[in-house]
Figure 1 (cartoon, one colour):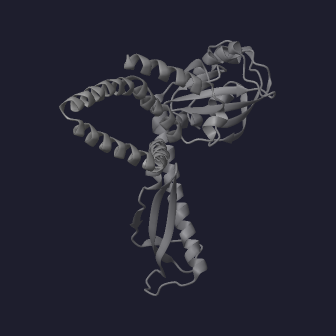
Figure 2 (cartoon, helix red, strand yellow; figure 1 turned 60 degrees about the vertical axis):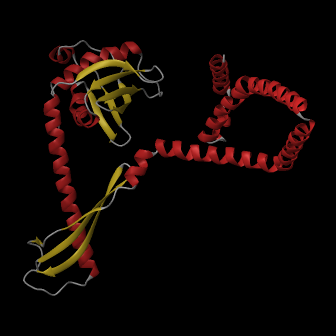
Figure 3 (cartoon, helix red, strand yellow; figure 1 turned 30 degrees about the horizontal axis):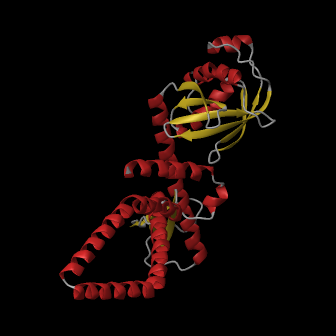
Length: 343
């Protein structure tokens, strides 16, 4: 009985909760909403277990009262006296008890909100709490032909996770002319060589990134392209390959299809293209049919889907391609990716 009532009440309350406007949820914390939802257990217990227990306890109390009256009247007066004292004590402390109960509900809701919000943001909290990784270099010799004096310096290099990015900090711990032990104190010189060290590190990181991208691209080889849809049901292309690989291989593939690449933004995942239809012989060379796409300017939105990448063309009016046009581009991009490599 209790289980059936519990299911029906919680199902009804949840349906009602889903019908409430967004403003209701914006004004309340998650723990507060969860606390209100959990209060059904107390109400259900009152209407099922507590009422039955109260009736049984009442019958037992009347029976015990009659038995005590039959054994001796003075027992009745003793029990009645303690009962009256208990009732008076509860009545006198009811206001404080109610206030303490309300505070307990509020604080319990806050604690629950803090717990759930901490779990939801655990990735950010962990990244922000990552300790700084620091190393100190040996003497780095700067042999520059355009300098009259050759310098060497030691640097403290620190790397720390900041959100979803990494901060690289370079600090000079010593700068001197080669062959001398006297330290350079000119701040402009120190800052200049700090900048040179940062540029050297960035160039090295870029080379490593390009090498890794090239190796990954060669490992994936031909990229499989399929027709798909976004969360709103609008058509798009889905490429089976990581975002970094597809992004690097997009420009030559687009040019292979007659799309001139304009402005690109990797963080935003946007590519401006101008399409001019290929000749019949060019399409035959690709081994695909002409998708019959209208010539003009398009914006290509590139999305990261973990190990897959989405491609969605937007026309100048801000509308995506129709399903038929999108499907026609599947074979075209499949062929273009197979015939091009990373630039």
